[in-house]
Structures are given as C-alpha cells and as structure tokens.
Image (cartoon, rainbow, N blue to C red; front, top):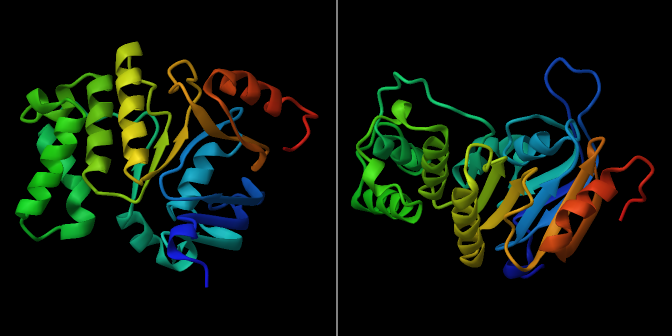
Length: 252
C-alpha cells in the first residue's frame, strides 16, 4: 500500500468534465496529481479550462469520465464531503452593499462545514476565525458590514473565510484581481506560509509580477488539457505560460 505521506491530496486521471447542457466537454482527458504542501500556479489563455479544473476538483461540476479523488474521497459521489475539506476563493465575487453580515460573520461562515448551520460556534470555531482575521490583517474591519468594503477588502475577507475552514487544499481563482501591488505581495506571502504548513495551494492567475523568489510548479492549460507541468524559476513563469500556450507548442 502507498505510504500515507506519499498519497496525493488531489489525483485526477483522464477526467472529462462538461457543463450541464453542453455537448462538448471543457476538460478533456486531463490527469494531475498534487501533494500536501505543494504550491501550484495554473496559467493559460482564456477558455483553456482553468476555472473548470478548480470546479472539478471541488466537486461542483460533474466528471463524466475518468477517476478523481480529493483528500482520499471519490469526487464523483462524495463532492459534499470534499467541499468540507477544501477552501475555494472564486473569481470576481462581490457582496451587495446591503448584505446584512459583518466581516466576522462572513469569516465564521467558513466554519459551517465543520459545525453545521444550527450549532452555536464553539471556542475552537471562534479561535479559527480570529486566527484567519489576524492572518489577513483585517482585525479593524471585523465589525463592519461586508457590503460597504472595497473590492480588495472583500477579497481579503473571502480568503480569511476559507483559511478559517482549516482546509487541506486551497483553490484560488484570480485572487489578485481586486488587490493593489502591496496587497498582492501580502496575500502571496500568506499563501506561501499556508503551503509551508502543509496546505496544498492551487492558484489560477494572470498576475505573474508578485511571485515568491523561488522555483514554482507551473501547470499550463490549453484546450481543456495540461500542456505544461514542470517546476520553473518564478522569473520565467510569465514567459513560460506564453510560450506553452502558443498554437503548435509541444506538450511538456
């Protein structure tokens, strides 16, 4: 039997994924393994299937063919259980200005998968929320209504919400879209620390100017499959994505 430490947290083998009502799959025969504590950047052109990959990992889209396990669970029939163990920061989400929840209440929602909707938060839940708020540097915002915050502040709250889940995996779809330069740098540093703690980070982004100064595992997608999967220096990431996405580029 494979040692527990060597088992991938995410194991996708020849998966196909299609949106409901679509005839053609968006993901086509994709295979990928990701282990505990890995930091993965996912790049590629618009329409390559990057968001679909995250939704497939999280059990939000039906996998029609192939095999997929996440945190040791079969995604095809245990999607609800998978989502309790995975954090997912979706792209370009904003709250209505009249949303009747404070920042702290929104972060606490990240604990619902562990505590259920009808149980009062425990001391452990409160501590997890306080840690996440402190980590994201938003303590001074915790009592403010979420809807009146700027887009960048709301983005930090959503990241804190997912950190509060104590996830084994964090999926992030364009998390820097509403952040200024210093905030992007700050968030990237937080994600690095999460990876060092053992959380697998899967980050979809078009922003490659604030990457940590080290080698990064880069996955490039094109036409619903992976055309590049290799570790490369952070300063080469943008050029590598561009080159691998070019029509006629050889799979690597």
